[in-house]
Image 1 (cartoon, rainbow, N blue to C red):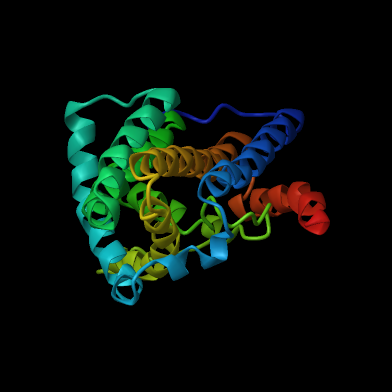
Image 2: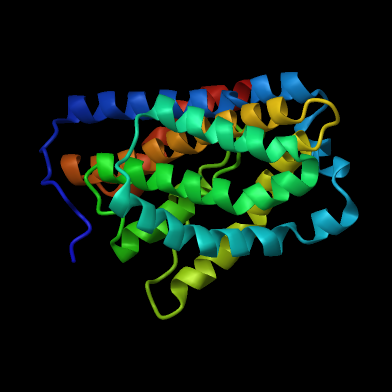
Amino acid sequence: MSEILSPARGLSRQETEAELDILAERYRTAAGVGVQLLNLVGGQAENLLDRLPEGVRAGLGRATEQALRLAMGAAVRSRRVVPDQKPTVNRVMSAAMGAAGGMGGLPGALVELPTTTAFLLRIIQGVAAENGFDPEAESVTFDCIRVFAAAGPLAHDDGADLGFLTLRLSLSGGALQKLIAQVAPKLGVVMGQKLATQAVPVLGAVAGATTNYVFSGYYQKMAQVHFGLRRLAIDADVPHQDLVQALQLRLQPAVSKG
């Protein structure tokens, strides 16, 4: 089964440069969405994890890896019965999930974690389809998981970490499970920050809704950057790595200012 659902467009150099400018702007806006979340909960992103009980922090990687494994099947099954939604609808639905999880404090947020992970993966799959890729193709499944290796909405890296665009493993036996094991620790830190915001006393459902709203917007934009570059490599007949380097050059001014 081919991973490509639509043929190449044959872009000119000027059109390719314009597409890269759009992707660079999407990356910048994605990196900035965590500000509203930090304004809500206070403090700094790096000490959010300190708010979690030691037992929860210790089990984050394992819990996130399990959530990713469950999310893969749930996201694919849901695409077969429910069509992809507009970004605004996705963010509202995600916020509703966060509110429900936040109402129960940390225990509720832990229960909500696999559901939110599956929903975020479903959003990423939708972006893949928008860019002409088959979300059920094995290589595209790899790429959907790879998007979760992005820094996270609270990292404020402004282009310093584009490693998720070049993370690769061969499609040999068990490779998808290896990829999940590789991505889970980083995603576990990100999800730990999310859990910490939902555990803030008093705020409860409001924190959960805001957190999920921010996270869904962030991973949607990261998916747009990832699959946008992959599609651009096909349409412009340019090596993917060359496009990643071109994107990095566009983001360098933002990095140097940081």
